[in-house]
Each structure stands twice: as C-alpha cells, then as structure tokens.
Image (cartoon, rainbow, N blue to C red):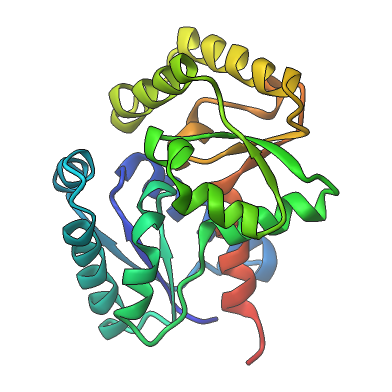
Length: 231
C-alpha cells in the first residue's frame, strides 16, 4: 500500500473523519488488522481562516505547499488536501511536490457521472459556492452546478464556520439545511454535492430528497483505490 499524505486541520473535525474513513476502508479492503499507511500534517486553521478572509490566497497556498513538501519528505506517495475550500490553491500545492495530488472535485465529478447524473446542487463555504475554482472544476468534469440563493449561501457558510468547525451539530441547523436542499432540488438539482468536509457531520442521506454526494467519503475511497493500485 502506498503511503497517503494528508494536509489536514481545516478543520480538525473533518480531518478526524478522513483518518477514520481511510483506516476503515483499508480494513474493509484488506481485512484482518490492516490499517492505512498515513502521514498527517495538521495546520493551524485559525491562520488559514485569517488568510482566507483577507483574500491572501498566495500566502495560504504557501502554508499548504510547505505542508506538502514536509509530507513528501516524510514518505508520502500521494497527497490529499482534506478540505474543499482550500482546493483553491491546489495547483500551487501540486507544483511544490513531485508526488500526485488527488483533487477532491475530480473524484466528486467522477462519482456524480457514475451515478448517471449531470445537474447538481452545491453546498459549501461561501468561497466554494461563489468562486470558480471549485464550481469550474466540477463543470470541467461535465456537471451543471447550481448554488443556493444569497441568503441561503450565507446560512450554509455561517453554520460551517460557527458550528461544524468547532464540533457543534444542531438539529435546528440540520432543518435549515434540509430546506436549502429542497430549494435546490426544486430548482432542478438531481443530486446534492456536500462540498465542505464538515457538512457530512450534519447532513445525512435521509435529509435530502435527491442523492447526496459526500465529498470526504468519495475522496477517501478514491485515495484508497490509488494507494492499493498496481503501478
């Protein structure tokens, strides 16, 4: 099994879910006491969030690029950025290393197409829903992407940063997310992309009238496929 390098900590709540999923998937594939070969570099999310809010993309990218270099030096043979939003610097991170970076949006688009769908609603941070780095990548993967209206986007973003990133899972917020999802489905979405790793802590398949695509799980599954693939 190849060693997977994780650029995590954004937030650590979802990075813990990556760790759990990668190990559980490895045990399911290999059986017995097998666990995943992992190296984790966990950044300080407060620093990253400040750079996000200030629009200092290059500086944030360099923090993650430094993490990627450290992971490669520690033996990582493929890399994951354990957050949707910071895939806005994925090209900068990939250019810093010689090992492959498995892009989260690509694995998501592949899963949506495999389900026979093309038009999806996207939930995530305001950066992910409103900027082109993620929506454009999904579109390049053959998808038509819908996002919530402005007030719903603000709600989704607030719940992520003020609740989910600090481990708060509230039924009131789940109900509000359900309403946003229903609005997207009414607008024509055939499926819902949970385009923030923390959203999977809140939204369950039964919370949506359309299929949901949990990007953390999909990313983890693709990583295990790549780590176990024959060269």
